[in-house]
Length: 331
Image 1 (cartoon, rainbow, N blue to C red):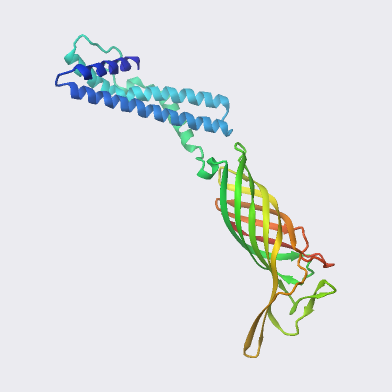
Image 2 (cartoon, helix red, strand yellow):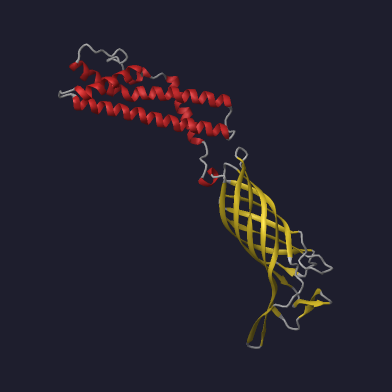
């Protein structure tokens, strides 16, 4: 390589002084060699950076890193010699034609490319490149310490301790969350944000909720009902921990706390040829506060999630009804 650099220096002077037919070809060869060397240096930098990143993430040991860096450097030097060899021979012929006293000892005219490369370095090079190419490439979100996510989820809401009084109904939520990386090697993230939630719970037995001395109770409506549903909306904050795997699998768990924004009952029935759809907005003492635990497991942008309310559904009810939701969420 030193001989090549000396050759390039010679060509730089020649470019200023030469007034001969070979000037153009000499300059072109110089630029070709400069381009090859610059490209190999850039490739070497990228591969060394990939190894350092793998070491930082704990995917390889320090010993493996040192060995790979050494092999990568050797391969880079060998590759540079290989790619500049042909151009070097051409330069040698041009310069000998102009200045016969200049000899290039390091470039033997009877040498071949294969003679410059031993089998073992070539095998190490191929193995090293394969290892680098197989490393998972972090997405843009993983490179950032904090990322912003918008999510949408829908599922089924049911109740525990309802004593058979309720049927499952729909649950939908819109999420705005932030993910902050707290451990790069273990790929752990702190997840926090807020949700806007709308949830239902169907009531069995042609009944609906009324108050008796400020205590909610189920009362017969007096008609055969097609729908009797308690609908409530919440604004909640969430916080939890999520772990991401290289296979794009993600698991997480956390909790939520929020307040109710609305609660009403929907009654639908048919009488003769007439259909009635009534919304009742009177207070039935739905708990104004909600809190609970949640968990999810997913792949990529889709996840199966579940959450359980530790707060009872009603404020003054002697029967503690605790809703839970199972559904699918998209980020």
